[in-house]
Amino acid sequence: MPKRIIAIASGGGHWQQLMLMRPAFSHHDVHYLTTLPGLPDEFGITAFSIIPDCNRNSKLEVLRTTAALAKHVWRLRPHIVISTGALPGVLALVLGRLAGARTIWVDSVANAEEMSLSGKLARRYAHLWLTQWEDVAEATGAEFAGRVL
Amino acid sequence: MIFVTVGTQLPFPRLLSAMNDCATELDEPVVAQTCSDDGRWSALDCHGLLQPDAFARYFSQARIVVAHAGIGSVLSARRWNKPLVLMPRRHDLGEHRNDHQLATARRLEGSPGIHIAREASDLSVLLKRDDLVGAMEVIDPQREALLTRLRDFIDD
Image 1 (cartoon, each protein chain N blue to C red):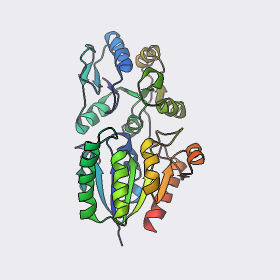
Image 2: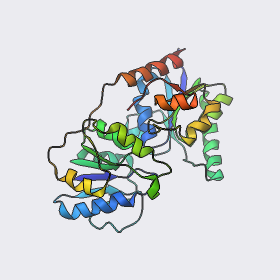
Image 3: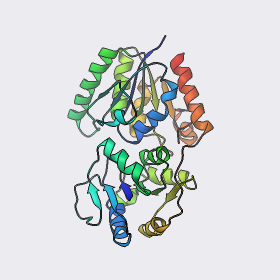
């Protein structure tokens, strides 16, 4: 039975890494979320929504993004939430977990020497907490399973 | 045409000024996504932020792409088989919150089609070469391993 999956990444490198991971979940019922209009179309994706971006310096932005994500999580009732970052992905993991989903964080391959700030935040909310670098796994206790680079 | 991108998060005047200097010596247009509304780079065709379709168009039509050492730039270069010159952002110059781009550049040095420009002077040498090959998708067991782990977790 296909599972309902929310796959979420901010525009740029986070999104491109998520795209390379598609073969791991494309046989399921996936809804994509990202912050940059036009980006899903570039990759031939039709099941998607655009959410407002946010960063940790603006509580208002964080609230706005959280509200948008809550609507999608409520509507889609995902079995799985997967994110490659950044902060909107963490928020989606939190909400997904509250709604009973199993959650996956794959820290960006850009972070070869330490876990990203978002990744550190995601730790408490990710059932599967991955880094793409062995050294970071050793230093943080995250799991290393491979990388996309 | 040379396409320059500094990503969508932070400006990168050191790279753009260096490219502006190069552009005056080169006999080809230089288009740049500058992530800034600063107009001082008169030799560049500057765009603050490009829509994804315009970004894809410039990227795929460029002879060489010059970028900050962001993962999006690297993966785009592999997707469109473009020679890529990376200038890593430096924390000590206030160009990023840490030195992760230097780490990325170190890890990618020697990867086919990817060249590292640490200083402005490295850029002009690379851009005058006409023998640069494109970056390409790598068949990497590390990626397969990651996909397998994710698939197992999701299907479980």
